[in-house]
Image (cartoon, rainbow, N blue to C red; front, top):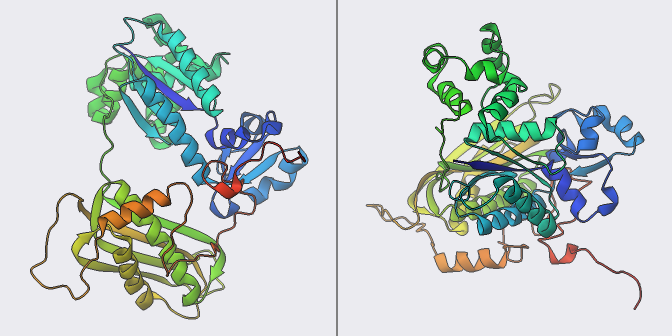
Length: 424
């Protein structure tokens, strides 16, 4: 009985190195939207003491002075590289659960009879590195929670292959003894404090505690964690992603926006992106909400928050219908004289795209709902936006600060890397 966890190493920073081999040993940090805080660090940056979430302005001078390299977040690029890694895994293993952009669980129960799982893990790691350039760590163990422990052991022991298997009870107990309880999957800061008060300071203490006591004292969720640490599988692989109940697309602005004509195309861009996500989820929505707000931290400027929901009589996933609803919601909540710092769009009240519920009343603005047209547009825009709607910002001006973004190497024809720029 075995599962594996594939974890991309310092994923965002590793992506930045794929087309920049000159940065192989260079400390790298990736910043959040508007270049505000550090959201990813290479191993070298971690060794320099750069903390997760630290404001960039606090470490900028010292980090750059030590030869560090900084990048604005490039989520289009990261998302495409993640998809490539996951496609490789799904081509090798029948049962794969994509857990996050840089993590996936693999079901290896049937492989154990035919393969040396450690060797198979090394093969997977080498293949992913060869085909994508992304380095991964792999933890192999009987349960999901123990695969996380195995990944931590691979880091702690600095395993050269980056693959570690917890196969025997002795291996498991040694790993648990070396794992602080706050590093156990699902144990947050508050729960860690309560466990420490109960003299449970490492994963082995937690595994040796009576599960019934844990359920009474804490929760059934933590009880499952205890059983998982003992090698009893309580968390199975999810074969399909749970359908979302809402979709939000929002951004904070690096440059404040004070006029409606500037704000309209920004919100339209959000609406287009939200509609694409909605179709990708194979859903339709009947509620479109827009919100805008000023910065709550600038006490010298007047504050304003606007929020409005538009109800659609018939569920739709046609971008044109969602754009129309977004415009209806934005105009009445906008106020002149305010410097807006954030805006967003929220889609909710979903129904499956294969079903359709009609209204008893005639809708004067009947949804357009041209499914084939939307499919064609999505196909054309899959790698690079080519089809725009009239209300969008076609100049791609953004109020966000992303002054240090790398090219979209794999998703934009105009930003493809050039192998040889010399004369023929």
